[in-house]
Length: 327
Ligand SMILES: [Zn+2]
Ligand SMILES: [Zn+2]
Image (cartoon, rainbow, N blue to C red):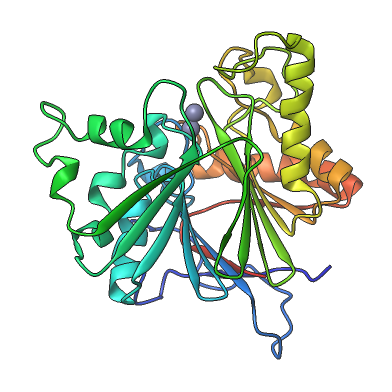
């Protein structure tokens, strides 16, 4: 399996985000210079729960979840946290006309950046929002609700772009150009999905937010005739299927074991290292960082898990804003 190339994009003219403290040199460069990457992943927002604007957290970044993927020319965005503001400006600057937004779920930290997504102001652009079907509300209603008065002065109907909402079922697979996407439910309060994105023989798995190995069943609207233990097992299997042989596994590592809260629906690095070992994933990227984590805390977490990752044969990274990974 080819190791990913990792670059920091802080000097990229299209990077307009709030990225302040990341180093301006490549962190890792294992990608052969004569190979053309088939998938580029850029982290625009890596923080969980709510954005932070603290100097001590500026190195990893304070924006809530958003990834931009260029998969063989197809523009895909995952989640619409506040990081999507920078992603949108970059997409408009490059003149991208078709964008597929894969939404994990509608908790506020994953949708709050959407009203500030610049491509929505462009008449020539089509934005397709993909999500799991919600049993009681359409995706359109969820996004309209966020922008209705008195929360906002700008209703969703004023969007100039062509906006489509596509609701999926658990297990759906769909093609975006030559890229295959799989959508699976995860163990998290409400209706939450993870995604597997496959392009040119490379795999990105996005498994956030979820309590991977917890004993509490969080997900709503599941088949009540099925035993809870079996449902829990199914959701765990979903995560394994999403992460299988992934080159890059973006994971919910909101907690450390000593902080774990069983009712919140989040995981620790320990569970994802085990998962990566089980499913033969090449590397995990700690993500959805707890809002209170300072940069020094994140560095300490990487150090704490370095030997465990080596024991599992898994590369360990912590996602930070402005880092681009080429596969
Ligand atoms: Zn979240
Ligand atoms: Zn959530």
